[in-house]
Length: 222
Ligand SMILES: [Zn+2]
Image 1 (cartoon, rainbow, N blue to C red):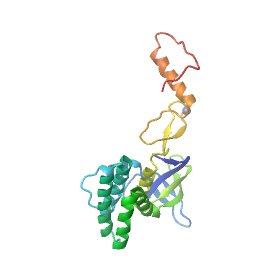
Image 2 (image 1 turned 60 degrees about the horizontal axis):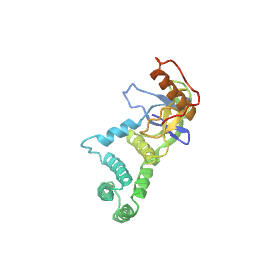
Image 3 (image 1 turned 180 degrees about the horizontal axis):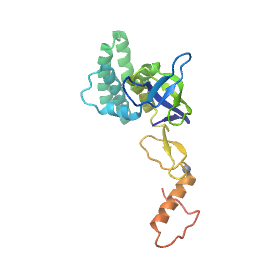
Image 4 (image 1 turned 90 degrees about the vertical axis):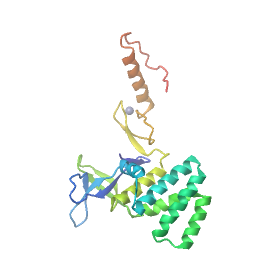
């Protein structure tokens, strides 16, 4: 999956792990050997959300933030506060001072989204914007290079906050053009024109035996 924001495509990348064969491309590094990279996709983040018995505190923190985002969106303030409290507990063990924790608790009570957004942008801040060369088609592309897979997941999590905007690319079933669409919503065509063409095509398939009595500007039922 590629992420788009206002039609800018960004791939989320990590250096290829030692011993893995999979490599998607490379980042040119000045005066050094190019760095082999692989893309990290949203599936990895999804897997983290459903993984049982997470023991790594940083992974637990990330998952807690995403769950909190979810409960904020559902308007479940009790769950939001419960998650916030757990996150502060984890934060404590990750070196935050008491004063900071008190302040964050106030933020959680008054503006929990602000807490999630601030934490996530903080966590994702080590990512570096680079150009990388896709191995398949040799075209320079924009990517966010992250040191570890966890760092890459932080970046992907940022895009989840933006989830309600158009942040995923779909491919048009009619003309093949790529277009931005909402995560989870499977729009199949890029434009009204292609949408009409697709429904016409469907109707032609349905009424094949009756012969084609098509009207080019018939109304579309969504
Ligand atoms: Zn199209």
